[in-house]
Structure formats: C-alpha cells, structure tokens
Length: 212
Image (cartoon, rainbow, N blue to C red; front, side, top):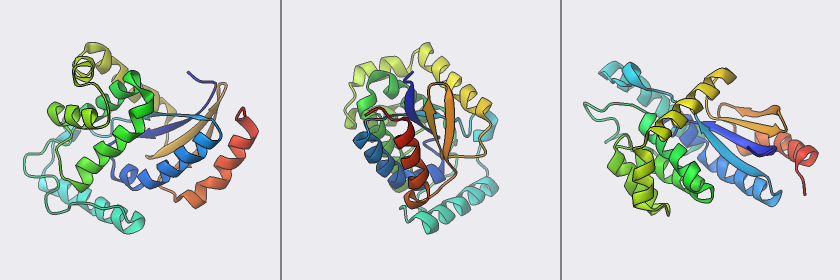
C-alpha cells in the first residue's frame, strides 16, 4: 500500500461511475503530473439475490441511466440494455478489476474503461467470464494469466475483501474518490461531480501531500 495515493471506489456496473469516467481520466492526468499513484477498490453494488431483475427493477435502473446520460452526456444503448433474463450480478466484473489490479496496474484504468463502455455503450454482458477475458486481452492482459487468476480462489477472496473494505467505510454512494496520506483519508468526491467541482480540493490535497 502506497503512503500517498488516490483511491477510486466504484462498481463497473454502476451507471454514475460510467458517467464519472471522463472525470476520472482528468484526475488520472492530474495525478500523473504530480507523480501520485491512483488505484481502485470495487464496491459490489449488486450480488446474490439483489442481482435478479424483474421488469420493475429494469425500469427503475433505466430511469437512473437516463438521468446519468442527461447529466453527464455519456452514451448509453437503451434499446438493447438489460435483456429479459439478464442477471445484474456485478461480482464477476468487480473480480475482473481486482485481478487486473494484481496483474498489471498500468493497464488497470484502460481495462475499466473498456468494461464500462462494453456494458453501457455496446450492450455486452460483462457478467460473463468469456466477455471479461476478451476485454482484458484487448486492454493488454495475457489471456491465460487473466483466466487462471480470475478462476482462482484468491481472486474471489480478494474481491470479497474489497467489498468488506468499502462497506466498512460507510460512504454514501459511488463513485467516490478518496485521498490517502499515511493512514489519513480525505474525501475528495462522493457521488458524481464534474471535474471543475472537485479539482480545487484535489489540487490542494496534492500540494499538501504529494512528494515531488
């Protein structure tokens, strides 16, 4: 664990996190210039029984998607989204990110972008291991290494550990951006905010804590 870093808390199948994606790219650029590490933790938005979608839940979720599209301008495929029988289980996509983080952090945020774009813009089923593998390979990961890790017990345990860590933070929603220096955490953003809204606080934190 780095002593000074930014921690992006998200679920890849959270629509507001997709809306936040362009903001994350700007945060990454600002952090890169300041030589500050950025990592992520996954939240486990819908797993188990929560994952079963009926028509009422589908309509409710799509209302959220439309609000995100209107607020952020991010593209969605509403026509083919959430087909009948779809199981909205975010654990596999979360686990894929945990595996990616372990295998190569340099490729991690590129992979996240591909995951989100595949689900929201291209209506791909990112609950499926084969889809996750293909997206990982497109992001630059080795297919065999990814599959081996994804199917292993260690990845499942590490994903559950992320879920627990995030739950213990008791943050109100996602996306959330935390700044960590030593064992101190600062909340930069909770919920969607445009970059202009969070940039002053982020800049102040970087100026106070980053080691140039």
